[in-house]
Image 1 (tube, rainbow, N blue to C red):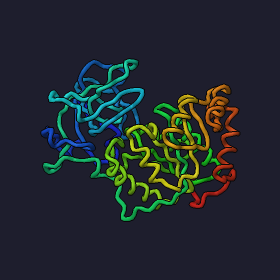
Image 2 (cartoon, helix red, strand yellow):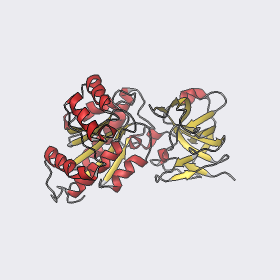
Image 3 (cartoon, helix red, strand yellow):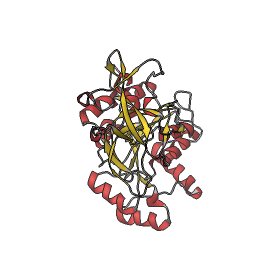
Image 4 (cartoon, helix red, strand yellow):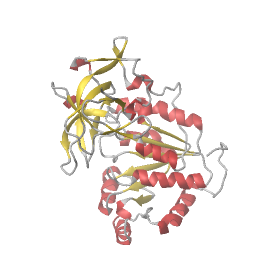
Length: 347
C-alpha cells in the first residue's frame, strides 16, 4: 500500500486525503506553483527523504506518493532544474526535499542521485487545479516600515542561516520582538524553522506568499512578496531579520527583494564563501555590507585578507571567543541595550 507524504511546500494548504482529486492534466495546463503528486521510483539514495509540513524529514521508498509543487531551482553547488524540463515520460525530480518538483538538467557529480518521481497528476478540486497562490497571504494595503537586518550571501552554503540564528539569539537576549524571514531562494522549511528555535517570535518565507521558489518573473515576485511584508508590518516587530537565499546575482529576485525592503534596511551582513567572493559581490552588485561572516572568516588569516581586499570587518561567529565582539557589533549597529524590553511586551 502506498504512503502519501506531503512536502513542506504544502504546509500553507488545507489538504487532507479526501478533499481533492488527483487528475493527470495536459502539459499545456501546467504552471509554476501547481500542486502535483508523483510516485517515488528509482533506486534509493541518501536523497530519498521528504521534508514534511512540520519540517521533519521522512524517508520515502519506491511506490510512495509525494505531494509537492512545480517550480524551478538554480543552485550553484547542487543542481539546476525546472518543471518545464519534465519530458513526455513524466519523470520528475525532487529539486529540494520540500517537494519543489521539476527535472534536473544539471546536477553535481559529488552528490548521490536525486529523488526521482513519476508524475501521477495535479491536485484538483471541482475540476480545477489547486495552486499555491490559492493559499497565499493577502493584504489590502502594501505598506512596510520595519527596521530590517539583511543577510546576503555570495552563494548557497555561505553561512546565512547560521548567522541569522546567531542574530536572532542575540536580539532575543536583548529583549527584542524579532521576526525571521527567508524571502528569496528555493523552498525548504528547515532554515527558517531554526530562526524560531533561536529567538524569533514568528517566522515567514516566500512559501507563505504562494511561491515554491523565487525564480519567477520579477513583477510576479514583487506582487507576491508585498502582502507578506504588509502582514509583517502589521505585527510591528522591533526588528525583521531577512535572509536572502543564494546571492543577489543569482536568478532568485534578490535584487528585487532588496529594492522592496528599501531604506528599512538598517544593517547588512554579507556571508561569504571566501575573501575574494566578498570583492566580487561588492563590485558586481554595488553592495557595501556592514560586516562579513561565513567561511571567509574561518581563520585570522582569512579575516585579515577580507579587510585587505575590501576594508570590511569580518567576524567568525562560530568561534566562541567571537560571541562577545559579535554581540557588541549588533549593540552598536542596532542601538540595542541588553535586557531591554520590547515595545510589544513579547519576545
